[in-house]
Length: 79
Image 1 (cartoon, rainbow, N blue to C red):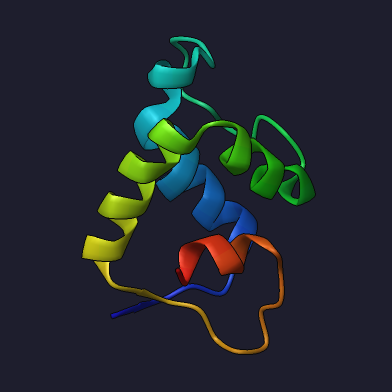
Image 2: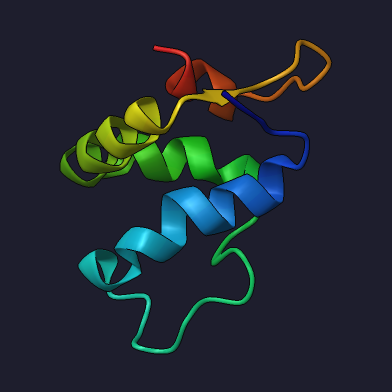
């Protein structure tokens, strides 16, 4: 299992970059989140088909989020 301690870095590298072309974030590789980290849960809710693919990949990668990381995004990741 891979321990995640930087939620913003995780969101960029494992949620947005692998699927950025699906949502038309452009051809250029994202170097920062396309929105604030607090906006990501709402974005997930607005794009369930995309999130299904992202979540499937993330669940197979076996990431671990320590209890001290508290964010609404984790409720989507732990489902």
